[in-house]
Structures are given as structure tokens and as C-alpha cells.
Length: 482
Image 1 (cartoon, rainbow, N blue to C red):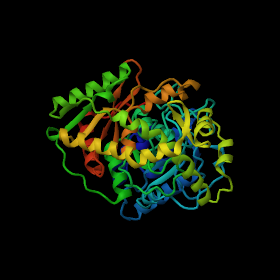
Image 2 (cartoon, one colour):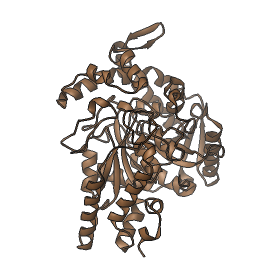
Image 3 (cartoon, rainbow, N blue to C red):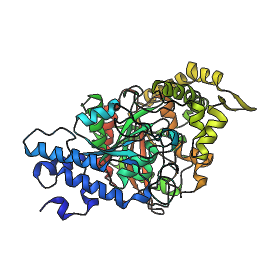
Image 4 (spheres, one colour):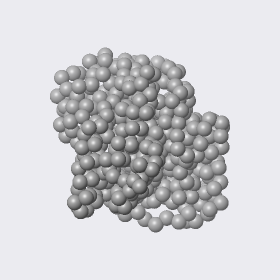
């Protein structure tokens, strides 16, 4: 009996890439059946507002072609017949690219971003473009500009009363709700890691400049990066290998690992997050991982003067350049006038357009603050990270990805207090250009919501960090389905 005939759609779409490929080879599942199962899940989950554009017909045509090639005896590519989704600020030829904002509603790129091209060449089937926090300028995904359901904002895969996190909201929910097997997102200060933590999936924010940034609607090019998202760390590693043509995974043993526990990243935790994260660390310790206390790291303090000013300054220059390059026919002020989300409109009106940031005595020009950040502040943060790794002999730093589980959806989630709780632990490594992985480690006993663990490593050690993630996931296991 066919796997799809024997199982409901959630079971078929809960397969890892390796499991799906094995099912294809064994003849117990076809790509067409898997894509139909994903589309079925998408229809069942319309209230989650996952998609801006769902290309069901195109995906089914590609799936039928993949099945025909398999029947003809053609060799399987690494992603042959595997359905994926792409965040809607990443260019996909022939599909709208809105960045979650009305001004881009009719923009259709002519070319794929390189990461999309690489995955298509590997056989991936693109289901559609996923919803997001407007212009990627937030951490909640509570954006009502593009809704398929009756309520605003992308909703959590585990509880539709709660937020998805952002800004790669729809990509994470598509995975958490088992509407796709893999995804591409972007991350500027936590935009893949946060929604993956809140929806129980895995991701890699690669080292700075590991992935090309062409073909992405920008926030801040010195911080923006595309990255892979999936149901398990092995699939994240596969996507990274295909995008970068870097397939090596160094061997990792738990007994050889030294992970730094940075105390400031363990502050402000809610009860569920602390309980699940501490239990995960206890299990790592019990299985031979050395946990090194890193007190007085001052990473948050070093990041504070460089994180926000860099984003605000580059948001203006990089968007102006992008609009010009794409021949959009609009300028940045027209873009801002069409912004739907009050929180993002306020960011543009108060800071981006006037080129100001908060200072000790009111708003100040962002230019000098940005220059100080780029000419010394960022380097000081990078050097401090390097010193911590060397001084303590660390393979990575380990901490909860977010300080809270997904909060209930309401207008209040876009207030600064919630943003700061979500991004507290993710931003410093983004400022320093470190590779970061996020992996789900359990569900809160009170909320029933996913909790994520982040590991940050030295720049350029992405493949070793992924190997560490695979080893830890083998010990900690995958979390229950939504």
C-alpha cells in the first residue's frame, strides 16, 4: 500500500528529506502525493496566514515531472521531488515578491536569487512564497497586509491564538505545521531563529558573506543573510551544502565538546523556557558535553550601540539602492506611505526617513553613530567574541534562542517590550557575523509551546557547527508534532 494512502497528510509531510527520498526510491510515496499532502495541509491551515502566493498548479506540474523522471530511471538529485517554500522577500522568477508590504504587491522578479537557483537545480519543488513581518522589520509576524484567514498576522503552528515570530514567519509556520519539508528565510537580527524557535523547527544563520545577498529585498545588507530552515539539523546541513557547494561535515563526539553558557543570555527567561532549556543542558552534561560558565561577557553592552544604528542607517541607503536597481518606479517615501503595519510605519516615519536614532537627549543624526559602529564598535564586538572562544576553549556558545515562548497574538506584541524579549539573545551574533543554529528542544509544560536552543560559533565554522547540531539533536530528539 502506498504510504500516502495509508497515512493522513500530516504523517506524509512529517518526513525528513532523507526519509522522503527513501520513500520515493522504495516506491511507497510519489512526489505528486507528497506535494498534494503539503497543499492539503496548506488548505487546512488557511487561518495561519502562511502564504502570500501559493503556486499549487506549478508545484504539482513539477512533482509530476519529477515522478516521470524517476520512473524513466533518471538519477535522483539531492532534492528531487522535495517541496519547499521561500520567504517573500527573496526573489523567485515568475512569482510576486512583496516583502509583506502593499507597495511591492505587483513586483515579479525575472530571476531567482542564487540560493533559490541552487535548490531548484538540486530538484526542489517550490510550493510558494511565505508571509512575513512587513519589510522584515520586526520579530512577531503580526502583519495584516496579506491574509488568507479571518484574523491578522501569521499564526503559530502549535496554537493559532499565538504569534509565529518573525520576520521569516510563514516559512517557519509552514515547517511547524508540516506544509513543507524545507524553507528559505532571511535573518538580520534573529528573523529565522526566532520563528523557528517558536514553531519547533531548525535553521542556520550562516557566517557573514557565506551566502550571496543578491536577489533579496534588503533591510541592512551588512547584516542581512538568506539561510536554510528545515524539520531537522541534517536537512539544514543538506540545504547549506547545496547552496554553498560545501559538503564536508567534520566528525563530532559529545565528549569532546565545550559549550559556553553565557549568563546574560540566560536572564529574563519565562518559566517554560528556563525549565526546558535547563533540562536540555543537564542532558548534554550527563552525556559528556563540557559546559563552561562564561560570566561577565558584556556582549549585550557591546552590541547595544551598534545593532540598531546599523540597521536604521542601512535601511535607508540599501532600500533606495534596491528600488533604483529594480526600476521599481517608486521612491522610498512612496514605499513608506503604503506600509500597512503601524509598528513598521512608525519605524520608517520616526527613524528611517528622517535618518535619526534615539540618543541620550532625544533623537540624533544616525550618520555619526553609524560611522562609530562601523569603524570600531563592530570590530570590538567581534574581537570580544573571539577572545571568549579562545580564553575558554569553546566550540560554541549555548543558550535559549528566545527568552519567552510565543505570546498571544494582539496589537501589543509589536510594542518594544515584546520585541526586546524576542530578540535579546539573537542580535549580538548577527552584529558580529557569527554562524548560528537554532534547534527545537521541547515543549513547555505550562504552555505546550516549543522552546528553542541556539548555538553560536566562530565565523567560518558553519559546517562544524551544523555537525554539532546534528550530534545534539540525535541526543535530544525531535519534538512532538503541532
